Length: 298
Image (cartoon, rainbow, N blue to C red; front, side, top):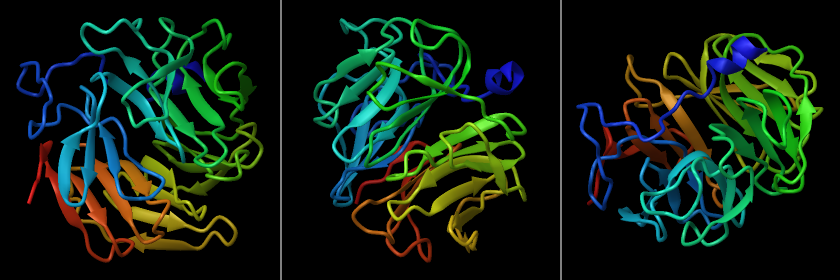
């Protein structure tokens, strides 16, 4: 288990840009990294943590979210808040790492819930409607006595360990059902695995390709991004699969996925090369809104 988790969710802690120079994100500047995707509850705003703060895409335009420009990791959107971890902005009073934090005003302010100064939770996901949190804990801390999969129903005050029986490969992605918080999916280098008992036991759901991203739609379908830049939607009740065409080219890979809670046909995806696309027709057509980390404005 330690080997599986050690390679999971590697991400930055104040890294530099690809050219070796530190990038300070501002409106219109390149995104140094992309650390997640999430829609507001009305579906009108798409939030993207980009190393220094949050970018917001709405009405065809990009803007910066309010508040300090923290380096959000494990960014997870819920219906009336987002949960995250990561590193505080330069000059911030928060400890590094921030532990588990929550914002109910789209980043204008944050509340530290637990583990401040103890752990950076890169692997995290929240049940959109129930707010049950799941994390891949990288190391022992004051709340979790070992590395592994844990979940919390009280916003990080107490955590329950899950044994993850049935998982194979190195963990690459984590997603929780929006309303059935016992249903959790894990992606690995060998496929996608589904649990219906809070992560105690998993069964293989998709083993055709390595999995690079996972997300549940608000209707409960599981979106799977694969190692060959393909997107597959799975209906859990019937195991019916639908392959969704994407504009992602070979040599790139889907890194994050999100579905709009207000419009079941609206999807968003981000890639390892920092392209971002949105679709209003469940993948029939796509619009690129960021090109290799550069925001595209009309």
